[in-house]
Length: 230
Length: 278
Image (cartoon, rainbow over all chains, first blue to last red; front, side, top):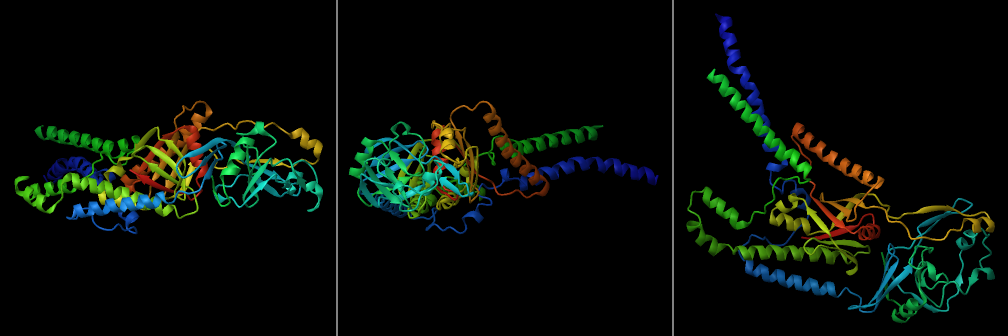
């Protein structure tokens, strides 16, 4: 009798464990999965350190709208003031193109040659990278008919032994073309003997320009003019 | 007999419900790369309306007067929200102009991606296609403003192209070897682009190319995409077993021309910053 009662209890309640477990599964999913939670969940930790003045839900919205409009206007005018007043040049190293601009218009665009992204390994194991640096530079010196003082790598690249620092072999009057604009750290915007390679990444870090473009750039950019390389 | 039928009916219904919940919370969000199923920004007056309904008041009659007197109109609020968003974006952009590195400005409204430095636009390109994960749209308005208020800093990036594609060359021993090894320069071939950039504050930016990818490159990119998807699936499954899901990763995917994508990626420094306009 007792055994039958026990079996009856088992048959009555145990099968309900399955739907009960499914219920628990559904509830846990509802509670813990992100889909049912606020989109801002776990956002608080990202934004707690940043403060924004005022509250968007506050009642004086007309005043806030005006304040926001004034702030936007002020920020826009401050941002506009950031544009250089004097002409400047943008150099795109991926496309090997330049854009000469002033604060309002584009003065000239054209092709140039930038760094060949090569590492020359010297016989002693020294590694010399040839790449055009990116960032903002300024014209530090303008030279007409520049003479290039060849560095060591210019000889090593040709399989020659570098001469002494003051050797006449170091001075080259033709390679840099008619003009050169120094932008610091030994980098220049200059002309080239190899006009056919313009538009290709072939230089050792300097920016090579065609004769006509170089003349316009030389005459447009003053000392201190900004050079943006990206 | 009746009890047996009831049991199986309830069990079947619960199984169906469980399958539905599993699909909507785990499977679909992973498939669509949307961590949340539906996006909706709750505005203040909607909340007010819901509260009024909950408290048993007849809405809008009972609450209308109160809302009118104490709360601004819907247009006012949404224009204030938009203005605050623009203001924060301009503030973040202006703060970046004082730094010495190139940064990215993503304008998701006008669909323009631009590189800037010191407030000077260097390169601008059109975003051909755009996907914004709905978790971003679901953020509460004030939270979204706070989220956008500061520039995003790049944590790490995985890409199919090298930032600086260096080639090594051993110096020739003499002039004969130098003359032999001289090769005429050629236009460099642009590799196919697929970039995943992970920013601080959990934002993930994906840059892909508009041009169709074919051949072995496609396999490489597909395997990269699959590895990310696998991670998401694992996260979702893990969340079910541990009841602790990691923070949602809002995702923005933009499609650009291959050349533009390359220019953007190569110009940005390793710890670059980004401003979002949306």
